[in-house]
Amino acid sequence: MTQLKDILQNHTVLLAEDDHEIRKRMVNTLKFYFNEVYEADNGYDAYDLFLEKKPSLLISDIEMQDGDGIELVKRIRKTNLATPIIILSAYSKEEYLLKLINLKIDHYILKPTTNESLFEAISSALCEQHNTRLELAQYTYLDVDDSTLYYKDEVVVLRKKEKDFLELLYQNRKLITTYDIIQDYIWMDKVMTDNALKTFIKELRKKLPVNIIQNVIQEGYKLLER
Image 1 (cartoon, rainbow, N blue to C red):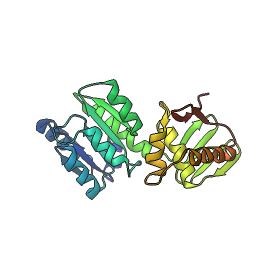
Image 2: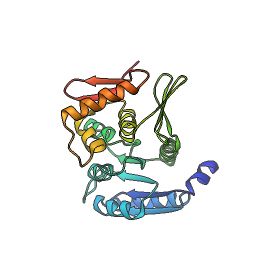
Image 3: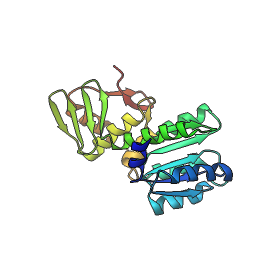
Image 4: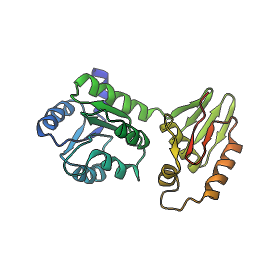
């Protein structure tokens, strides 16, 4: 735990939790480890704090009276895919899990939380944030820092949109990356036409030394399972 404390001293965290007693207990625990701990009791205030403070990590409850956790994460992920997010909930509802995976949630912890489960999630989330090389398939790695794909002895330099797309497939590797998600996170405020997407995928496949993109008809794309 000492090593983890040393790492967390360089980070800040935002906690969104509407239960006063739970929030107070968690804040007191987090303050022992993190450089700064920001707190909010609803999703609206949490979003404003997130924009202002730019924390290294967000920990949020799902069901809050004013602005729930899912809406908070949706707003954040429209412009920020990088900051790790841990979700707390008393319920393991499947619809929550599906929504959260598509929103690139790093961890989902069921309440009541323990210090062990919380810091295991925090450690993993922040370690994954610093791991810039993602394994897309066997012998196939994407370095998100330098937008480079490595396959055995081959090296492929990617354009930003290509790197972002492959990273998105990796983050959603257990589910289908739908057309709507690609529109929101890759094309963003520009219109993504069918022809533009097909041309983009076709050109990207030509660059890749091995086929790792699976087309899911009328739904989207995912990493090819091997």
